[in-house]
Length: 557
Image 1: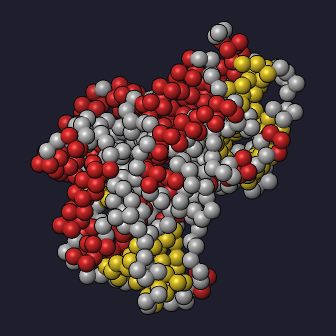
Image 2 (image 1 turned 30 degrees about the vertical axis):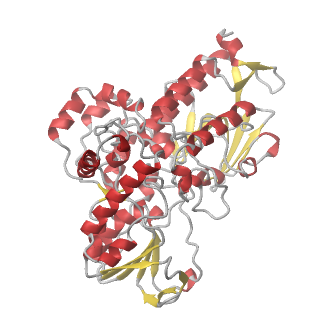
Image 3 (image 1 turned 45 degrees about the horizontal axis):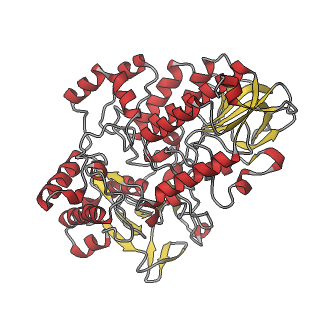
């Protein structure tokens, strides 16, 4: 099917940027309002992050039964996942199934990248331009670009000199990458590196892992879904999903003591850690309620994982290099793996600690460290993303007074609820900075955000409002609240991408709301019930209309 066969409109009610899970759901919901919506997607098809991240071993770290749209009871029942943690191909198949079932492709231009979006103050419209020469005006602009959609470019000198091939996990080629008989390097041991390393090791003649910072990883214990558990979920699937939205992580907490790790005996603590380790998922983070805030409880969890690594990796010297010691347990994105640590027991796998022997440059033959040169046929960069803000900056958004989003956020991002940005009227962001975002089940956060945004637009349409803008004071207050909440945890002690620390020059700001999806949803509901507290609305057809509070619209006092 030619997905470029449709005409791009000149004027539309809503432009949606992105055709991942957020963009697809936005199209579905906007149609219920009778509004015209058109979308742009840089990839040739739907799927978002699950289109681009097709590296070997790529799979979701949320259980499949929870990583599913909940808006359609029929869809919940008709789609069957083959594994507890779905692989990238199966998730992409699911995205395509949803797009086909609800006819969501018809209003998209694929292979089309948004290169600029400027707010026309006189018309209360966004002017959106693409790399194909399109220019579209819209009343509302909805960014569904995804927080992990802009891979970091490799930052090592000499890459153009390399005679072999190099790839990035975040934009893996669609065609198969030949590994058989090849000498392969992997640079980076975050989530994508930890997922792909075991599979690369199976096919490569030799695999060398260049590790700067060892990461905490726990076993997924993947396999077919337990039929009894699946039957229980499917018997009450709609309510199951509703309950998930009112949990901290957007998933059921199936192993949770509700206690401090320090409030029980060492014997009980270790038994619970063992139970969580054996269960899979990120239960080790939630089995006790204070590992993210209590240094003693955190240290106990870290020591448990250290002992597990030592028990798996046969070479004691390699095991010690794999122990995370420079940040608290769980304060960088926890990884879920299948056989990661055991991979270092293979004869064809080598670990290079680049804190001890840093990489100096890429050469024609391979990689030169301060100690030696390593020859390679293929280099895999698993070096992460310019997370959360990077994909928004790439859109070149300009708001009121010609202010660029990059300049508004030069000292760190500020948004109201992660949904709107003061000075950028009628712009909505799904999983924007200071929302729960990646700290919760993304299908839940996506559905909540999209529903909130569409309800807000419906409220504006019903009451004749042409502009919504976050109040700057409310936005500043929210930013302080988000930052203060993060400072009470151990998360800010880590140089993680959560803090923007992986991108040189990026302001050090904790990018997410850490209070939990449940508290966040309740807060958003409260703001609406109070007449959209913290928002300013403009009535009428022109920008000269008087600014009014939504309290007048709703009759609130």
